[in-house]
Amino acid sequence: MCRNITTLRGLDPAATTEEIEAAARQYVRKVTGVQSVSDATRAPFESAVAEIAAITTRLLAELPERRQPPPTVPPLRRPEVRARMALKELKKP
Image 1 (tube, rainbow, N blue to C red):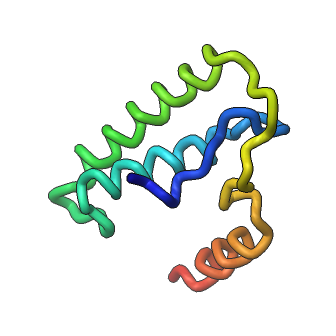
Image 2: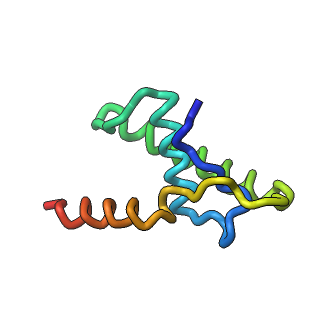
């Protein structure tokens, strides 16, 4: 269902809060169809992201270690994604 969400379990170093929140945000976007948050959708959207991030954090802590690392690198660990995000931040007014 969510092809853009990468596996966070088994990362070395472990998944960061930022990576977990990004995955939660992508999940909420996918299931709701909300791509751009408006005043009408902001509160329920952000609440769902926070809840899913908390559940994901707990789940990752409770699962046993993976025998092999995940097959793909999460987007926030890719240099090209970080560069794109930094450029976006510079363009903000």
